[in-house]
Length: 139
Image 1 (spheres, rainbow, N blue to C red):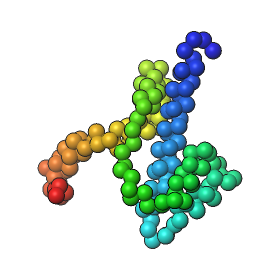
Image 2: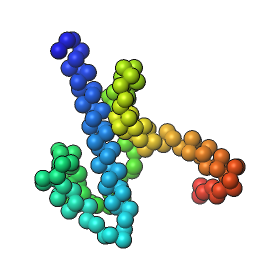
Image 3: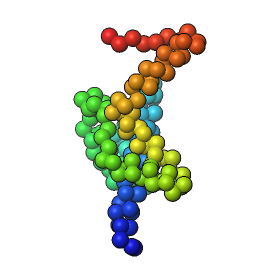
Image 4: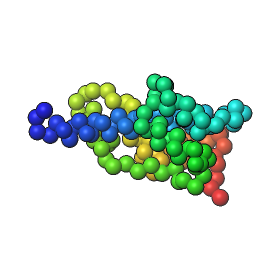
């Protein structure tokens, strides 16, 4: 393609990658939340790697680290962003092309970095103000 098209393709690839990672993370979090099912996350990832429509290198990597540690308690829930996902979301807006999955994946990165904490505190206080809902105080 024309000059710059390779970088553009790379940027879109990164947006797709972020969206797929977000979906896998959310899916495993949902399964993990059902403690009553006592599911083996490593076994599920391994099973999905073979013949499943969601099989991918990302799932291969996921199966590898879940095999070693399914709890991941030593890992902070902070996900960095390189900026490429951000650029992809901006490009979607500028071109008027809906890219909600890629854009939301970028927003979730920001959320994991604590950048939504103040807004969430405000939301908690608004709910308290209009409905008397409980607010969880910091220790």
